[in-house]
Image (cartoon, rainbow, N blue to C red; front, side):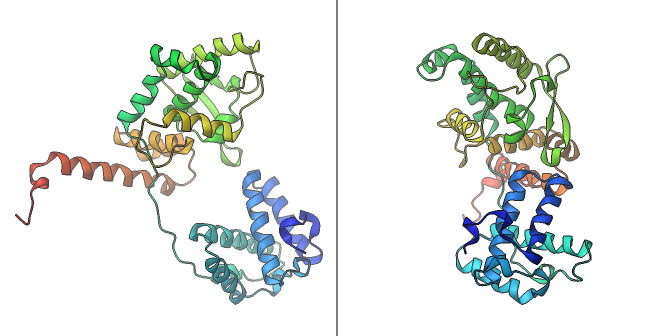
Amino acid sequence: MKASTAPDNLFHGETMLINSFLTYLRCELNYSAHTVSSYSIDLRQFAEFITGGNPEQFDPVDCLPGDIRTWVLSLSEAKVSHRSIRRKASALSSFYRYLMRRGLTSRNPASEVALARAEKKLPVFIRPAEMADIIDNGHNPAIAAERQKGPSEFEQLRNDLIVLMFYSTGMRRAELITLSDENVDTSRGELKVTGKRNKERIIPFGQELADAIENYRRSRLHETGIEHPERFFIRPCGDPLYPMLVERIVKNALTGHTLASRLSPHTLRHSFASDMLNNGADLTSVQQLLGHESLATTQVYTHITYRELQQNYKLAHPRAQKNHGG
């Protein structure tokens, strides 16, 4: 029986612990549905591997570090990325920590398996001049008139606002999609988003975004007849946005205006963070605005600002341009 086609309740006996663990993640730790689903897949894959395709016989207490090393090696040979392998091993380690808390095992074999460090990649971001061009295009009447061949006026106003809001607030895609209309306050210049693990935070914004929000709300009422929808961003039919629609909106807006290698909402989030730091914001403030639990997660953007500093130095300082070989 293949785990990929079996329902979650295929587990019997000891393996029912996996379902209990997933419920714990979802209900007590408030993990997102996406994360719980990923953990479920990872644990099911391990159970199938370790039992030779009979996951109903999986007994986590019997597993040894060597079993996990063999699994990791098989993943590597199958060309699974280092990042994915680390995530799968982390899911397994979390599962064993859960078993230890319940007194069902005395050891965590996953913690005894050393993994190769994944190569750290700097976040992709868009330069300020490029962002200015992208945003100004949304306010250019000639360009707006040309756009009418595509989306409706309401949809274009919404799409332009989506790009501006991502860049002005640094919010995540899921936070924008679930943003409540009542939590967007232009008089106070702030909005409240619900981030990972249902944690709420307040993000301030300036007059440019406030004006764009009010313009969008007027157009939204005219288009849909709905004055106060539950979700701030909606489609002409009144339904909320969905992830791939937001991805497509952002990609269309960025295409042809930037050299960035990735055109996505997360790229705009990275751009927000790097520009904040480049213009004097302190790291802790940026951490709070982004909703990062750990300051270490935010520190990756200091590498971006340092890279910019290096490039500016090489371009501007006369001694940096000297050819030492000459």
